[in-house]
Structure formats: structure tokens, C-alpha cells
Image (tube, rainbow, N blue to C red):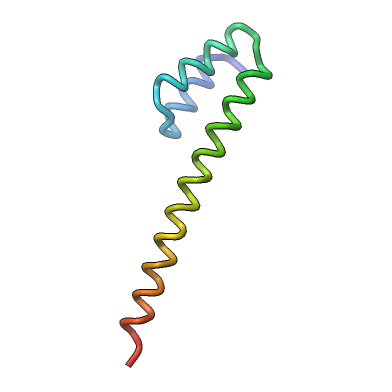
Length: 70
């Protein structure tokens, strides 16, 4: 994978420039294992955000159901 392609992909998904540059530099240096490790860490962080948002949605759903009760 080209470092520039990876960098663009990371920008498209909203990763900050610092992380994108770091991973791209690892890829350019052919340090793929380290790049993969960092990407997995970033994925875990995004999953944590997703789960946090899901909990908020669940609470909103509960509130909606409560307001529908007669």
C-alpha cells in the first residue's frame, strides 16, 4: 500500500493529521508491523467512541419509549 493512499484514506475517515502522518511515515519506512499496530490502536479508539454513542442512543430510545407511555 502506498503511504499517500493510506494517508488519504485516514483523512477521509477523520483521523487527525498527526496520526495519519505517523502511520504514513511508518509505511514509507517499510515498518508495516508498527503501522498495523498503530492502526489497530486507532480502530479500538473509534470503537470506544462508537460504543459511547450507542449508549447515548439507547438512553434516547428509552426516553422516547417513556414519553409514549400513557
